[in-house]
Each structure stands twice: as structure tokens, then as C-alpha cells.
Length: 179
Ligand SMILES: CC(C)(COP(=O)(O)OP(=O)(O)OC[C@H]1O[C@@H](n2cnc3c(N)ncnc32)[C@H](O)[C@@H]1OP(=O)(O)O)[C@@H](O)C(=O)NCCC(=O)NCCS
Image (cartoon, rainbow, N blue to C red; front, side, top):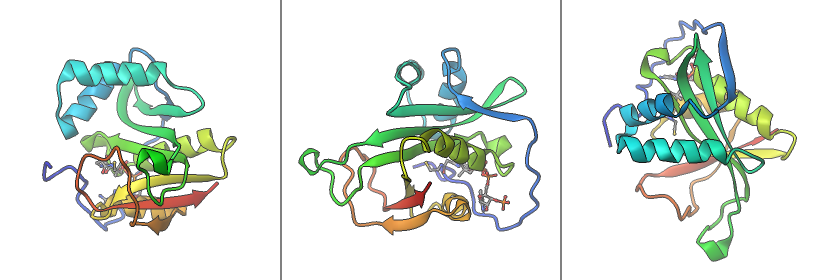
């Protein structure tokens, strides 16, 4: 894992939220910008990552969404949500079925301007008409994301669960919010 995979936790609160950021569902044409943001943080093969994004965009519907933050015609961040049917027969253990917020990334130079929070809230708004709870996973060392979620009202649910799709050996925690 790259050392800067998570934002360095910085308690200073010189908040200057960016005005004029639009939070919207991704559309075809956004793939290049999304791919660049993904690769800058997580690496990967450009064409494969781009294909994944274009498939995700085409699949946006009731059970999955991909939101982007756009500022002055530039994509500056994104976040996904997906309905997970956490069936024990499929290897899930101790996980509620429901809508999960997954994989949010804000471009480094746009961090700490309210965009991460905006992406979380936009996805919650999108899910609101379909569910009463929303869940998310966070690596327990990702203090920045945990604080962001806690401020919105998410509560820690459990760290004793199995998510069969997970490839990385991180200590993840599920957070829950009533919406
Ligand atoms: C985590 C991340 C999405 C936050 O996005 P962001 O746009 O910088 O966050 P916001 O500006 O909306 O922050 C909202 C609140 O979260 C907390 N927070 C966010 N980043 C923080 C940091 N680096 N240090 C301390 N608190 C932080 C603060 O309470 C902040 O409010 P404040 O600025 O008024 O103090 C961003 O840092 C990122 O892309 N990190 C790398 C990817 C990642 O870790 N994704 C999450 C797991 S998949």
C-alpha cells in the first residue's frame, strides 16, 4: 500500500469549503477523469480501470451508483454505492444486507474543502427513498474518513465480519447510519 493512500490526519480546522461544486451521477465521458483519479491513488492498468468505470456507469440503477464531484468542468472526486446481499451462503458473515457506500476518493489538491462530505451526503440522498439504513466499510487506521463519517452521524457497527470480495488484509470496520 502506498504510504499516502489515506489522507494524513490533520486536526487543524481552517475550513474553507469550495463553493460551486456539483455532486451528480457519473455519465459516459467521465471515465478518463475517474481513471486518472483512481490510478493516481491505487495504480492499475489504465485501459482495464477505464473499462471498469464505463461498465459501472452503464450499470447505474437501483442497486448501484457512482457519484462524481465536478468543479469548473473538472471531476475532482468520486464515490460509489451498491446494494450488497450479504448472504452467508456466498461467504458473507455478520454483515447486514443493504446499501453500502464504497470507494470514495477526492483529488489530493481538492481535499479538505468539503468534497468528501458532499459525496457521502449525495449518495445518502440517493439511497434515502429506498432504505432506512446505509452502511460503509472503513479501514480502522483511516482516521480522516472515520472522523468525516462520525460527524455525519455514522456509528461503528462491528469489526467482526467477513466480506468475501475483500482482497486486502486490512482491519475493516462497518459503520451504520439511520437515514
Ligand atoms: C477521506 C477523503 C475522501 C476525505 O475527503 P475530503 O474532501 O478531504 O473531506 P472533507 O473536506 O469533506 O472533510 C470533512 C470532515 O472530515 C474530517 N477530515 C477529512 N479529512 C481529514 C484529515 N485529513 N484530517 C482530519 N480530519 C479530516 C474533518 O472533520 C473534516 O471537516 P473539517 O475540515 O471541517 O475539519 C479524502 O481524504 C481522500 O480521498 N482520501 C483518500 C481516499 C480514502 O481514504 N477514501 C476513504 C476510504 S475508501
